[in-house]
Image (tube, rainbow, N blue to C red; front, side, top):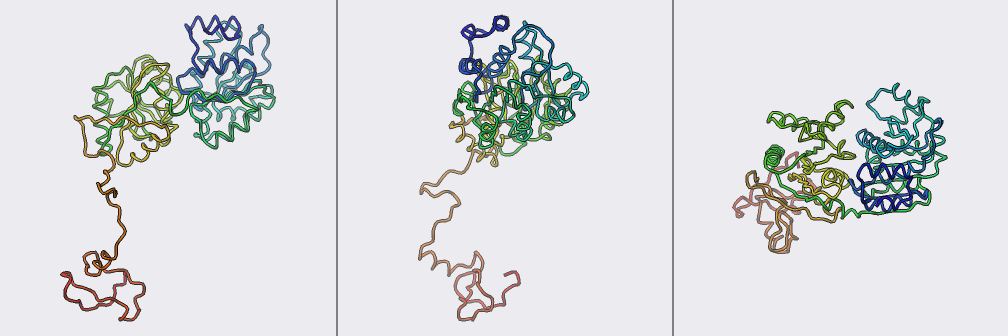
Length: 447
């Protein structure tokens, strides 16, 4: 029960109003430490309740009587507009019985309108690094008295090239008393470097090993011969799988537009989401998916983080993601909050090694699935011969083999070390039948 936490009664009232009963593992682990003011570095899968794990402690810190706001007291940094908007909604839901106000700063919105909002000084500022820096450089943002800094989806911010921006913003919050860093993956050297820069004596909470991520999601692969064959498989899946809502992920905007166009031509209720879409279209796509106006969303990785949609139970990787972390975030859109989901990756010859590396990273083996109605010829790498030698691998020549090579000319003349060496050092050429010597000719220029 949430009553186990030392939260203000107005926050507990909001939690009860929202019908939150049992806290999730990440909330059980993180909330008590965050309430104590500790710096935290938390790794937990998407859909595990991470947002509430940092929002409730922040709100509890800021609780008090209504008064004139003179400073921004908490900043929450996120990698995408969609995740920032979703976090704002969560803050507003949990703070509904308080006087705490939150503001949103992201790209794609009117700069002057945002500057006017900042002059009202919200208690909590939620935003993406790029636009926050623009407002900071324009003199519209003062972070000197921020008490709490939250870096949510920190690994994704690094992947998107926000490392310098995040470092600069954290330096602007120099007087902060607490920093909370959350991510769905353990990240690499870049994330470890950031942790060393922004956290002070942090408590490390590993709620899920990477091999435990998306345990509620069945993960399958279906082999394909080429992209046209992938489209045929996708059509079959969307027509025959049982699902409420689905996301089809691609690696490029052009492919996303192509698939979206084909789905619309087949009268599917679909929408497309990628970086070329303006903020209005991106918001419309997500809202229509959440409300059920569309059943299928075709998207690039811009939708892989922060998209929380009820009833989203099918993810199709038309293109295999470029890293294990991206794969985790894609399939994390389904199987959320204990529900079951299905993730299917379409694998061509060029995708196999990438897929195998992701399996090793997750320490899992994806289920191999064959759909007989759209079965192709490619089924994975060629099998190893019974002798133990892989197909196409040259074996070491024996002396007997080398002697036989002298009697063979079908593979072309041997490469000479020097064109002008003495004739006595040059072996005689042999005819096609391996019997009569051929008359020697001057070597071609290409040799």
